[in-house]
Image (tube, rainbow, N blue to C red; front, side, top):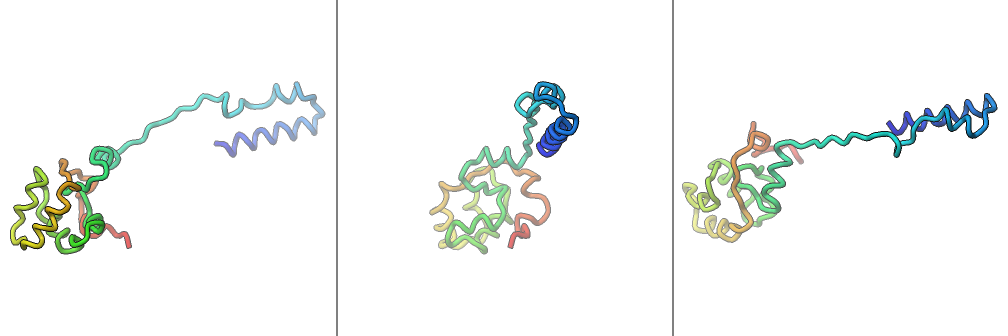
Length: 137
């Protein structure tokens, strides 16, 4: 859009030189500037943006990919995989009910419990196998 406005302004200026028009006549031919043109701003939102705004800096146990657990030492990949496979959770405390968790794994989960949250599962994050391998290498 900016390119077209600049191009048309250049053409009007060029034509004014060729035709020998004065500056007042050239201004009468020019198109409105970008500040004069009405602008419509569309707000684009999607489910992923809404969910990310809802949880803040915490990690959502029901909607996060395995790779996001890398910021918590001792969780990636084994414990993170168990958390993902046993989702969804009603609360963060439900993660301690995962079958076959060792005492060490429970201690690791307890260590980071305040940095986790749970929200309703969203197809934007949980569809397919993206939670296990989202293809980011």
